[in-house]
Length: 250
Image (cartoon, rainbow, N blue to C red):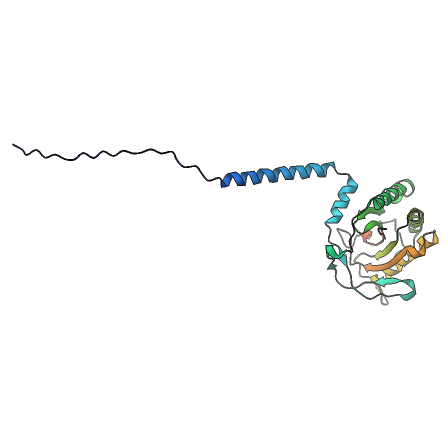
């Protein structure tokens, strides 16, 4: 008779447990994403609600401002010619001021006068508010120049524009600076370069303003930048042949 062997019976009980909770890091990342999207659409909505002048003001705030170092030239004329490369001006320098309500009023007044009295030159007169003040750019345009070709003598168009602007600027107590600019054409006649041409044109604009009643003592600086500060786009664009008038904050 076979020997009866008993084998132990092993019963395994598997204890089922619920899986642990996943980490919450994804929730934080998702919340950050949603918040960022809300902020983005809020900014886009606010920008869409801004006026054109306000958009220009904001755009100017983020511009890279430049100054040019050099020696003052011209003694009695008060003309400064700045040579050399641009250097960035520290925004905390204190030399940059935020536009105020008075500057906005000047901008509105200038735009109104240009529209009513100088509308034929509307595309040549750029007016915008910056943190330095109200800037007017009087530019050339093909067959409608502000100055005679290659000379510092004002063309009839330039005389008309400056005479009208002198009357408007005289209504406000603000001082102004005048800048002369050229395009990048290599102009040199017996050592008379774009630097001298731009300086002389700026000085011609100064004399024309004074001739039409603007107080000479309120013109604080006349400067030449030659072709160093072109408008955006083609540096040979005739619009770069221009005179800039900056109405400074009071």
